[in-house]
Length: 403
Image 1: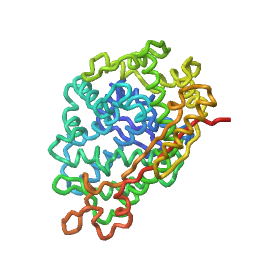
Image 2 (image 1 turned 120 degrees about the vertical axis):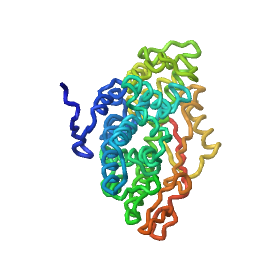
Image 3 (image 1 turned 90 degrees about the vertical axis):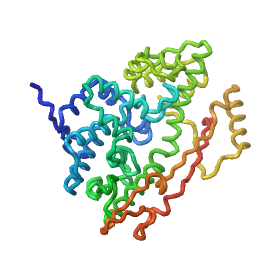
Image 4 (image 1 turned 120 degrees about the horizontal axis):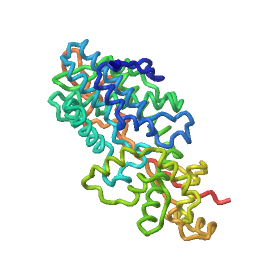
């Protein structure tokens, strides 16, 4: 009989235990194995060469942190059954199973308005049928319908194990030390009050360190001007390909990618939609971009060369929107240089907005020694949180190098 209680050696967290057989079975399923071929950070490796990790890595790490968090809570006399622990680990293991190629970059584009969480839920329900209902409670937790709220907060909130893993993992693989956080310290400060996830008051600075690290990672890594541009170009490439195909132009691509480029109606996903989606990964997109570099369509070829050959357009960043006159002048220069009228497709403005901490929507609560709970932003001991309650936006103008 196969031993399913494995140990995985993870470069970020060390040895990761698989304490339940159902976790092993889910990990072995093709739905989950596909995550090995889905980049955790899109095209970020073109800017930070080490960022080649995948959604598979992240999901395993998040499962490990969930196990650590639940064991910590049990030591604080929070009653958690074996079934609840197993279900919470299944929920976080599968929270990203619905991600498409290059993770967030192409979300909503291949399957219309199907956000990855919607697809994750659909795939979790399929797996629940395959495994005889063993994922029913995990699905309740994932949807926030389970009667004990803190389980869903550990999966999706402003301080969840998902964020704890991806910040530490992305910091590790990009080499950006500002994003490194002490996950063990933060988890050790977790507690439960009235079935809600709280942080022991003495852990306030660990939480502020987490929020600060997240802010730095967004501005320095995820919203880095070239990172934002690379992600934007991926979207432009797929949009252009869909536009050309809708106008009767034949584009070579894998069978599964071609299926999504040709189809536009996904209001009710069919079994065929799901089957093809779960066979789609980063390799389909990379293969297509390599082929499309020689496309007769100037715009598609230009963008594909930009990504595959890493010959990105020039970017300028600003804290205020760029003037329409400047954008129009760049479009005119581009049209004159390339002898084309496609300048408006090659020049554009991208914006990125970040609210580091939302003090109103499911705020992080601190548990005082007297049992009272207070909002992190209202604590007299907070140092940085009050300055992170306001959103900030950066604007990026991109246009071709004209040499």
